[in-house]
Length: 127
View 1 (cartoon, one colour):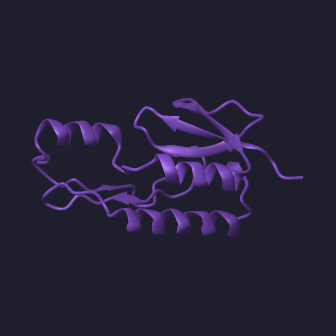
View 2 (cartoon, rainbow, N blue to C red):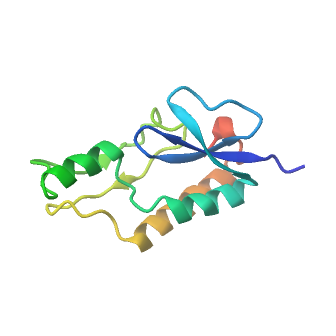
């Protein structure tokens, strides 16, 4: 039987999936979409257009894109911010503060999905 999942989002507007029969972890809330894991991941691909954390977007918008320093939000493999324990990607902001292209983000998400499936796809192990 395929486990139902739900889309969850945190205060930084970062998305993930979580089993529909479980409460999201602290700091995460349901987004309103539920389905198979693949359906949830497809939904996330449609709605998560800007990979930068909310705080970075707001800071860059307030300063016209100049954050006054390195704009790379690199998790360095740190999994603390994601409910699934998966390593996060980066929201590259070069000197001009630009985010990765949509194609790069889509490729990163596809790679995340493939790694998740290879790891068994469980959400304790969530995505």
